[in-house]
Length: 151
Image (cartoon, rainbow, N blue to C red; front, side):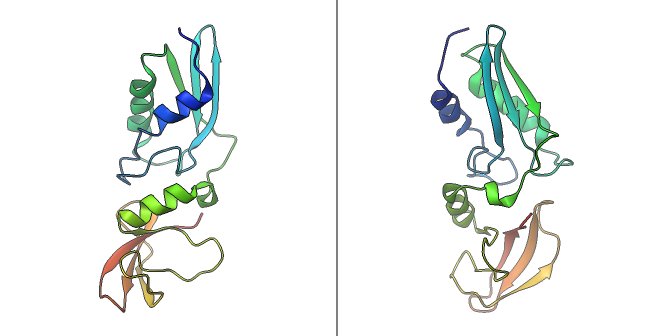
């Protein structure tokens, strides 16, 4: 196994996208909890956004693929830390907007439309395309959109 620094591992993990949120990587979603390396290999501990998320197996497989030329990689899912939408980085919030998903608000309950920037929005359903999203509608531009739930 070749020695690498954590910055290289993070750089490679930025290539692993959440399959339910194309364009948003697991680093910017705040899913990476710990990176450890020893003689046996690399261990990456991730925090699931939802314990029942159907994408966990796929994400774990993609992490191993992204790191496979470094050496043996073990992916673990943390049960000791809870994921929160506050873990999403500014880059992750920008990526959500680019994909037409309103990021969770950090300071208020108002939801801003990712298409036109209006706050004249209303909830259509507590459920969206995925477990972590809910459906909204913009009164200004007449576009439906998903909002990432604040957790």
